[in-house]
Image (cartoon, one colour):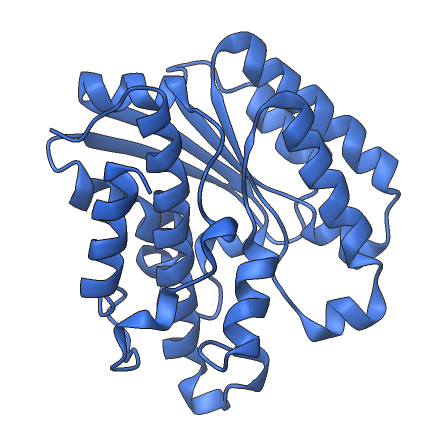
Length: 252
């Protein structure tokens, strides 16, 4: 495991209370199998932003980018991601814009991404595929929009990080969720985008009885959602900083 990844894993183990919610005492609550979080995709624009002292990030997605059901936007996974980056690179200013809303689909997200020019972000985090799966839209429709957006980002020198769907037993029972996950994974692979495997991580946490939103009692759900978002934010930071490290960004 690379130096940045080691530092971040230490922060993950030591910082289980970062979300501000009542997290379990065991520090391993956010742990996932290494293959779910280790990046194999260099992120050169992100590395450049870290080296220069300002990292511009655009997050585009549907409802989850604002942390619905949790204690507020500051506890959502994009905010927790930015907080961890600041922990590891305290001299870097993270300028993050979050765009999205409930029901936003890939074509609307694509329009936001194509218009992101002033100032040009170093990285776009694209959370996609949830609404399409819920509505049963054609995966080819989704794939075409992903391909258009990711190719445009590559041509403009902007790093892309995809975030797939949330794990849900209801969704698994009522949609062909794996075909949508495969569409996202294939598009990312073709265009050199990193992928945060949110679905697989959440399924792992549910299967190991660490974080299971669907089975959490109502009175504890806000704290559980904050916990989930803290873990996702840390996993995303691990993925991104690993990719930036592969592109030459070494923590000072």
